Amino acid sequence: MNLTLHVWRQPSPRAKGDFRTYEAAGISPTMSFLDMLDLVNERITQEGEEPIAFEHDCREGICGSCGMMINGVAHGPQKLITACQLHMRSFSDGDEIWIEPFRADSFPVMKDLVVDRAALDRVIEAGGYISVRTGSAPDANAVPIPKPHADRAFDAAACIGCGACVAACPNASAMLFTAAKAAHLSYLPQGQTERYERAAGMVTAHDEEGFGNCTNHGACQEACPKGISVEYISRLNRDFLRASLSGIAAAGRGD
Amino acid sequence: MRRVMTLYESSIGKKVAMAVSGLLLVGFVVGHMLGNLKAFQPWDGVGMHPLDAYGEYLRTLGYPVLPEYGLLWGVRLALLLAIGVHITAAFQLWRQSRSARSSSYGKARPQVFSYASRTMRWGGVIILFFVVYHLLHMTAGTVHPDFEYGAVYQNLVAGFQSPLIVAVYLIAVGALSLHLYHGIWSVFATLGAQNPKVERWRRPVAALVSGGLFVGYAAVPLAVLAGILGPL
Image 1 (cartoon, rainbow over the protein chains, first blue to last red):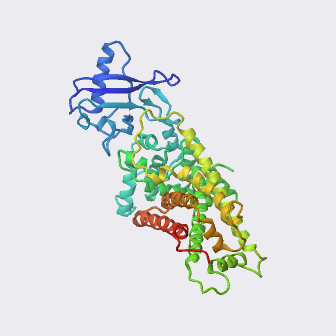
Image 2 (cartoon, rainbow over the protein chains, first blue to last red):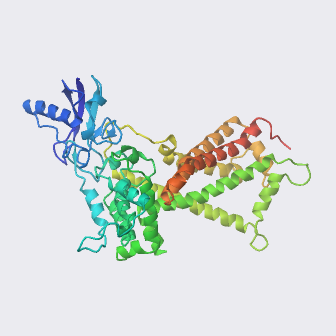
Image 3 (cartoon, chains in turn red, brown):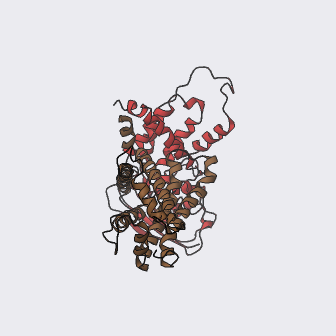
């Protein structure tokens, strides 16, 4: 396959970026999207230009590194996969492909397609800790957890923190991420002790990081490679509401 | 009160403020629509027209325990407050979201936005302008061709003679029902009531209320234009 790529090139965080066009010739449909970029990079390097910078690590959809917008869609046209799991058979010969970084002011572009997603780490940090007895391993099933709760906690914990929800959201909101991280603890007994402090802390951190707010479009759920449901956002809203009205949110800030 | 202010400082708090004030306003538009349909109530020609009597009833509701027009103005002030909260929070949230992405995508392909969800902000502005026009038209009578205080039925028949004005009303109630289709659906999520049990009813409830409002509101001006509701 021969393709035409329009790739966002930006040498440094402060530089002004622009789209540059590259021909991707001799692409096999069995290549992954990142393989294709590697091949294009080899040619670019031979021609003496800087290769296109993009983040990648596991290349099997579990690390959350490889986020990019492909033809205006986070992680590209296929549902429930990351960019590294996207294969070139999803495109046809002669296609034009637009590739650009996830855009949000909280995700500053470091170089080309690489963005700094440390804001998400700070939201997690604001969630604090859980109180559990450490020491010897507890007996298996000593704490009973209803199956539906375990399932929901697990579905939320599938979040790999790739930031596709922020990228797809028209408001650049990280609510789905924040909600998933809060929910994988709030569904479990171990997460109950600090449940409301956690909701208050994470939502406050989310706003302070400069993310937008949720207007219930549901674009995040569509973009999420792990299929995380917007229902978790509603749960976080409820926990946050309870934290605020019971005074936990104000107490947490020392007001 | 401090807790409510702390809540409001957050983005979720502003959304809750929008949801609560929005629900209040939905309650009003449903009541208003049902009141409008009094125009269709048969009249035997004795005393006041049922619609005029209903208007008089609203003006004197609560009297003599409350001062005359007391409850009416109380409700009007509460609605004004709800509108104020709704618009202020919407504006603040819009500003927050706008500054969250200052550089836009070169190529963006929105995935799932419904037409209703995409037009929330502009739809809201259209509704606001319409409310101002509607108050000048049917309540104050300033822009009405032949307004007579208290003669509600006559005023509406005279007010809807022009197809242009009926068209304005239809566009406005269309915008309102689109706004509420996404709004009512969103309220469940914002107030934390979204779960598998509710999920099944969320779209149907939003569609039923917003669709019902459109039909109910469109009925009166269209009936006047079609001559079904004529001068007394």
